[in-house]
Image 1 (tube, rainbow, N blue to C red):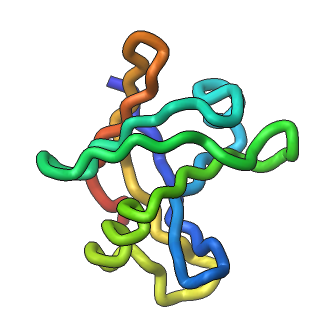
Image 2 (cartoon, rainbow, N blue to C red; image 1 turned 180 degrees about the horizontal axis):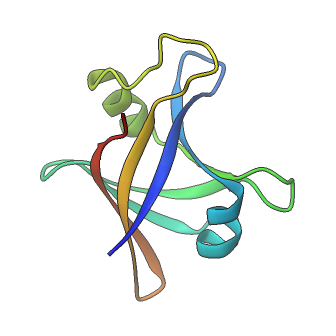
Length: 107
């Protein structure tokens, strides 16, 4: 099972998203608007798409209103500027659709 680390980032509007590093963006997600299924719990599965990212020399982002709420509800917001919360997910590509399943908060 491949694992991937996503970083909790502020959108700058009191909302939060998940950031994908540049290397993983280029190697696994490849293009904007790639469909990503986020399995955050047994009861919370969100379909979203990659935004921003290559060729802008920054990684893709994942945003959805329910994802923002999940980040806030689980207090995955860093209290220390410049030290973002990192979350570990399993990564699978099934029939061209990327599925990321939440595993744990990285310490």
